[in-house]
Image (cartoon, rainbow, N blue to C red; front, side, top):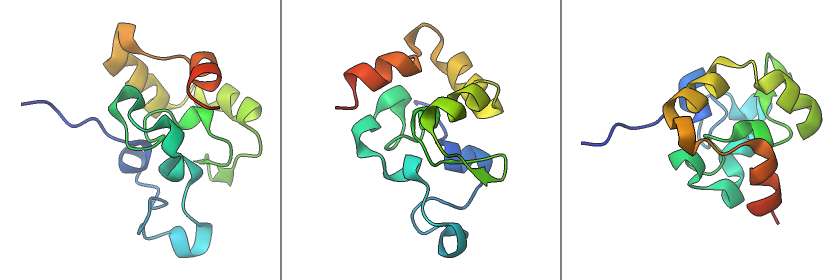
Length: 102
C-alpha cells in the first residue's frame, strides 16, 4: 500500500486549506489553490511545491514575492522533508517555474 505524502497545510497544520479553520481570518493559501502544480511530488495543487508560490503563509507572515520566499523556504522543515522523500525525483524550483507554470 502506497503511503500518503502530506501536503504543506497538512504537515504545518496552518488551517489555510479550503475549508480550514483559519481561512475566514487569513484566507485560503495560494499553494492550496495553485492548480498548475497539481501532482508535483504527488501533491494536491501546490501542496508539495509550496515554495514556488508567492503569498503562502510562512513563519507567521504572508510572503510578498516568490523570490524572497524561496530563500526562506529552502530552510523550512517541510521543504527538507519533501527533498528527502523525493530524493532523485525532487523537482527544483527553477524547473517548476519554467516548465510547469505558463
